[in-house]
Image (tube, rainbow, N blue to C red):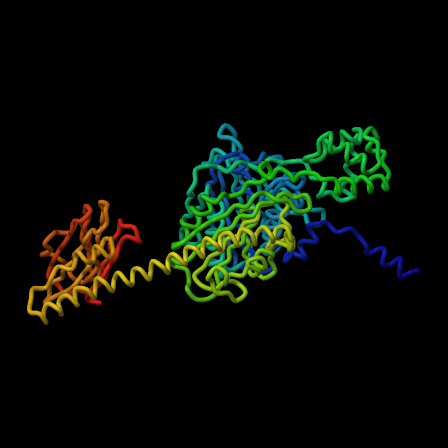
Length: 600
């Protein structure tokens, strides 16, 4: 037919670059605001992976500056091992080009799409090439290239290439210009803060126009680089097995041992027996029916899980706590790293943490921080299996209100480390629903929930004890004074009674006739190192014991006394003034001190 001939003339193949040029939203470039965050994310992922492979502590510069009304220049620079000049064009200007796609191990980037997609987005919005500088060693020159992507063929085009002097002995720098807006500044800083938490060994220097920020490292140890392992039989599909078999000249038994993780000679014989194939059969000559029987045998035979300790690099409980403490003020924080597990032949580890109180918002839902392979997930929270798992926990069992997510001054962190994170899309915004992963998240959160419940119960008990202690300190002296007035006798010393009841360090402050008295008794059995803070509009120039330090701001004075108080001893200071303000005692455990302001 003539129509068929006409249609045939219009049909042609489509390059992957052309496809993503029209479907950039699939890669996280669905808006100008998000474009900046996605670009920075992809560049930082590459930098952190490279530094860890080279066992270098990452020092990363991130710069976002407006150069025109709606055009921004994004720069990401690292001190990694660098890239040889022959590979620079393909790494940055060819989609689906990389070194990690065929490796079974934990990495941030995998498909070889991310940074080249950013290059594509830059040339799509401004038409300008991307500049890349890289150096592999101090004894070699740095190479500077201007690159674009030929979308028709998905091949790199080098517009210029020169050798230059560069201040860094090794590393990489990428500069891109594209249309966007800085409305995402808050979101970008959130991303960098969260990245710093789960990468505690990295230091980030950030320049956003005229503002500068530093997210410093809390660990000087580079995490061990995950080691690539062989694929596990449980994660193999028939098409992959067919391709692997066709490329092998080994006998079947040897093929199974050499090609798959956790398959030894004994397990290989069991697989051959179950599939009714000879161990000596030529692997590349197996028919499709024989390969189907082999696959069924591989996935039915009991085979140990892949070695998670080799191919994964969890953050660890200690470093999660340090990372969260660095960025947030919290009253309580605990972390858990679950044992390694497996889904579909892929190793994974779930880590979680809970923070409570401090400066977290008391109203509204808990703050949920989601991570996959040490990368923050900022979008599509409602579509993520992590969110579903958090909502599935009955938080009321742990004395926490719940409306879908838990409610109150609560922060929940969940990190999924896996050789193949099951994302819902190419933009890697949300983790897909996998029962094994959701179960591990739930177990980790339930363990942390029990710790949180214990903390909240203990805090409530301490609060009740403090309230009783303050009542004793305030009421007993008044009762003694009133009784003494009635019987017309001197007011007795009630400190002995207070000490027997409380056995704590008791601070009392009162103002009488324009004179402030601060009195501290150590009713404990141990010596106490005490730092006393008194913040008010009184200068305390005539203090009976001069303060160790005084500072003034806007008419308000901060007075500080430091001293040691032995068991049974007292401390007292007086000065003239109006009273009021804030009194605080530090250096004494919370459960061993009582602070009473009798003027309040």
